[in-house]
Structures are given as C-alpha cells and as structure tokens.
Length: 393
Ligand SMILES: Cc1cc2nc3c(=O)[nH]c(=O)nc-3n(C[C@H](O)[C@H](O)[C@H](O)COP(=O)(O)OP(=O)(O)OC[C@H]3O[C@@H](n4cnc5c(N)ncnc54)[C@H](O)[C@@H]3O)c2cc1C
Image (tube, rainbow, N blue to C red):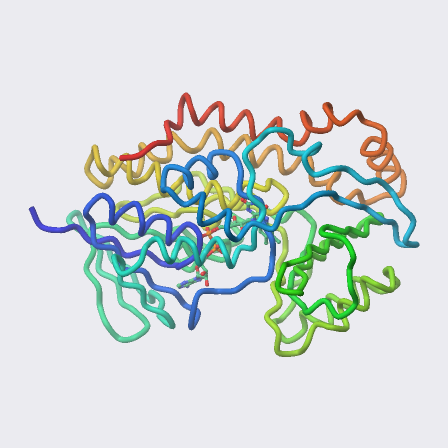
C-alpha cells in the first residue's frame, strides 16, 4: 500500500497536532508555514478539557508541565489601583486538570514531538488548490506543486484555505465586539504578583509573570464597531484604546518596543455550516474559532486533530471528514454559545454590569466560583469521554 500524503497549511497548534497524529497513522505530512519560523505570540493560555486529555494521550503532559507557569492567585485592581477582588487560582479551577503556559511553549512542545517525521516548510504557503476524486493538487508559493490525498487548513482564524475554497471571510466571521493585544516584555518595573489584572468598564489588562524575568500581557477592550486597523497602526490603536488607564498599564505599554512582536486582533468567532469540501478540511480556529473567552480554542484544535486521525484510520478520506465533523460539532457549538454568553462578564461594558460582576466575584463562595468556571470544561470532558471518544488510534 502506498504511503498517503497530507498537506497541512499552518504550523500552529492544530497543524502540528495533525502532523503528529497522521504520522502515527503512517501518513506522510507536509506542513507549510507562512511565517519564517514557529510564531512566538507572547500570550499565555490554559490547556484544559478535552485538549488536556488529548495531550495526555499524546504523552505530552510531562513536557508541557516543564513549561508550566503556575498561578497562585488572581488579583484584580480597578483603574484607580484599588482592590476589586482576589481569588486563589485553585478556587477558580477546582480539581480540573489544567496547565497554564505560553502559546509559544505549547507550539514548541508539539514541534519537538513531531520531530523529523513531518516535512515542515517555513516561508511557504498555498496559492491554488484543485481537487479531483483521487486527490489534491496544490500550487505552493515557492513555485512547487504538491499532490496529496488530503489537505488540512490549519491556518488560523484568518485562514487562506477557507478563503480559497469556502468563500470570503465576511460569510463566516462573527465579531464579538472586542479587540485584544498581547506581547511579552522584560519586567523592569517589578510586577510583584504572578498574575495581576486591571479591570474597568470596557477594558481588561492582565499581566503574568514568566520565570525568565519577563511578563506576558493581555490587553482586551470593547469596541462597538471595530474598524480595521492596518499592521502599521496597531501600536497606536492600542495606546488610543488605553488612554487614561492605570499608570502601570501605560508603563508596560511604554516598554513595548517598535520591533517586539505584538499580537493584535479582533475577537472573531468563525461559524461555518460545514468544515470540509471534498478532500479538504479546516481544523482549529480556521473552522470554528472559539476566541480566547472560551479558554478552549487550543485544546479543541488538538482534539479535532485526534478525532480526524481516528476517523481516517477507519474510513476513506471523504467519509472520515464528515464523521470527524459530526463528532466534534456538538462540542464546538456548545462552547461557542457559552463564549457569546460570558463575553459581557469577561469585560463588562457598563458601570452597572461591572459593579455586579465584581460583587459576584468578591462574595461568591469559592466552591460556587469553581463550579461556575469549570462547568463548561467538565461538561466537555464528560461529553468527550462518551461521544468524542478521545483516545489513541
Ligand atoms: C490572547 C489569547 C489567549 C488565548 N487563551 C487560550 C486559552 O487559555 N486556552 C485555549 O485553549 N485557547 C486559548 N486561545 C486560543 C488559541 O490560541 C487558539 O484557539 C489556537 O491557537 C488555535 O490553533 P490553530 O492551530 O487553529 O491556529 P493558530 O495557533 O493561529 O496557528 C495557525 C498557524 O497558521 C499559520 N498561517 C496563517 N496563515 C497561513 C497561510 N496562509 N499559510 C501558511 N501558514 C499560515 C500561522 O502563522 C500559524 O502558525 C487564546 C487566544 C488568544 C489570542
């Protein structure tokens, strides 16, 4: 039997996970990454739920734990620096399995796990895709052509594969009405906390201490009608959005150099009636971006790759793509609905909503808080153990 080839667009969390699983299945993965190297976005993420279970199945948890940045306490201050509420991290996440680490570390662990088994080509993307009953022909940006049995678009929320084969962004992008920026800086100012947030109506800023003497930041704010921001204007737009913020929030902005990588994007959900066409499937944010509010986007990209491999083991490519979607879609729809619901609590827009949210966080007993924060994760883990059936292939 000849070795099957999968052309994977995007060496992010979903793309590298797919490469790992397909290698395990005996396929030959070719991964195209538009960037010159693995993207090093400075943001932190929590891996939990089905994604954590997939990482465990892949044997990656020990490596991920080595990069973990444990958080003891979440401290929330107002714009004037007064304490709004504080909570022990464990009180928020209860006994749910959870690893807090940088996206960069997660991607690096996945890259190391893939090793030499995948052909990863940087500075390369796909320009044209033609499908027939037997395979795919792709024209690549380096002038080469590639024939494959399967094409996976794991190229993130602004997916080119989606645009090439499914239609324009406007058909699928649903803005949540928030914008965010994230970057890493050397902590010259001495944060003094492992996790510190400044919150006010319509704005939230989070700082995580990293052990290398640096900080990971997240700036997130409400925008009613987000006008597009060109890459040259992102720093200026971030400053404008934070006019009048707490001096410490502004001082960390001052430390962001013109050369340092800055992640800047709207919080957009992707909602598509189907994730595959012929022998092409979208995976992760390209198919169903959940936004950072769900706290499950990375995990569900990894889960999608695992389920895809399970189905490819049992069926022909086209059937496997349909079955993969049928298994995953109910979880994704639940998580997307939840993200829409909790967005106004994450960043309350009005003074009144802000006050009520803070009162709840301050006075709710820890056990109820933990239930609130982990309910969706527990439901998905439960659904995964029944319907999703995460496991080895
Ligand atoms: C601030 C922030 C906090 C978050 N927190 C969490 C969290 O706590 N928990 C969680 O689970 N998730 C979280 N997420 C979401 C999570 O990061 C994403 O869901 C996850 O990265 C999706 O993985 P992906 O592989 O689909 O896309 P990405 O990780 O975006 O990877 C896409 C890759 O494709 C490449 N690419 C793009 N276009 C092309 C092209 N045309 N050709 C070739 N390559 C291309 C990109 O360079 C990139 O390497 C957070 C997101 C943000 C922004």
